[in-house]
Image (cartoon, rainbow, N blue to C red):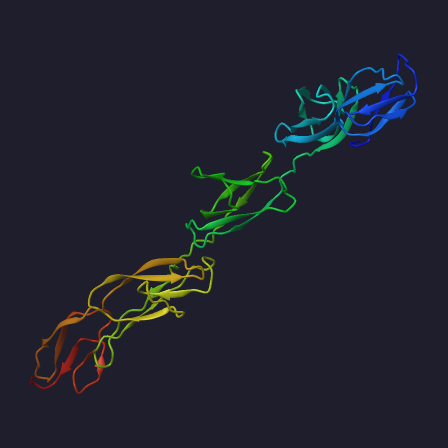
Length: 372
């Protein structure tokens, strides 16, 4: 280690003892050969030795090399689908003339890089070709983490809408970022969204989708999620309107419209409207005869805000446009005769009344005396 290197000095040709030596031009010290010079650091050192007569060998330069070291690093992580990575052997010190080996033996060596390595724990060894010194160190080449995830879907609000969503739930065990997310429709019109960084897909119609999550190491997983839809809300065919009629004062009564949703469609509770703007919890409405027949558009809205409509025919009350009385049979010698009432317009079953008498179903009245 630094500060503890040793130079061993021997004298192949002896002079006259005692001997003295100088290191790096320092003061001469007396020693008995052979001897060791200790406490040295790496670098080039000079050593001079002389005997009793001052004879010596001149200056000898002795290189002390930096200790050999190795720092293996993962230069390319293991990725999918190759499942292979790379380790670089970073050597320091020594003579800079190195050879490299790896255990267990795998892949190939290109320069100081071991390629095509499967995930494993490796020991990298560097050998100094000059000094034959060796140093080893382990490195872990980790396998990629398999992708795992789940999804949650939000159904569309109304049948035919495109406001569904799918959200990816990625557990913390997925530790190979950056993750990307792709959505592909499995049926219907082609649709591919992504890859994207967001875990949420919006604006989806009701159908099935493949969700693919890909890790930063190229590993991926695909699973299917379905965006559902409620049954289409329908206005039931039982929705109807009562007929208009006449009040006792001969004015036209209102009619009642009843609006019903088809059982099992939409999502309750429901509200009802006859103008598409104002909705009520009651499903009956009073309408006034306008004098013309038309189709009334009625509306049902469910808890999701879905709206269904249906046209109900509204038939105006036919009005009596004319009425006349005429002699049906002239009064005879027996004082018997009759009048007949003829009506134009109106509808339904008529009743007739000749004051101060009572109403009757027949439009023919018996008369016994002449008059207007």
